[in-house]
Length: 188
Image 1 (tube, rainbow, N blue to C red):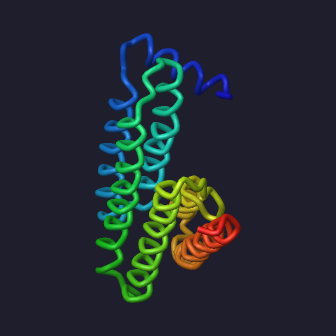
Image 2 (cartoon, one colour):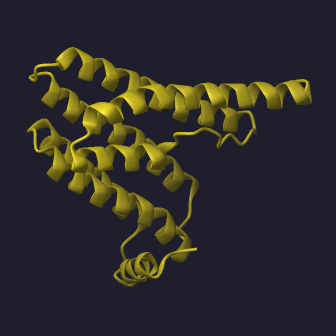
């Protein structure tokens, strides 16, 4: 169910002939802009632009449903652009922190966050390839985005990177365990 604000935006975009894939690409382009802003050191502004990109990411699926343009390719494209978006965002942060005083800690946490994030995505995709729905975990993509955006805007990036680095990997392990349990029960 859409909130009235999001619903109005979705209906307006549909009326203008905007497709869900157009919105996905617009969100991706905005994420690239956010990464550039983050790389320049304007973390709060980058966080705001990243928030706008996240809003577009929320709208594309709703627009697909409203416009009856849901497709397997659209879902695939959205997921793929999500992975690129997350990677590019952290690349922007890595570029910025590479020139800061405590670069090693920041860069290590960014790397661990990316590994965990990719593992979260991969475990879900691989489970789905085995016909197992796998949405478990304490830090899925929406939560990661909210945490990252809030930390950028509030100036709390280092604590958030610690949380992201640890909890993304715990989430991947939770998914691995979920698939283990589900396949053990079925004898597969």
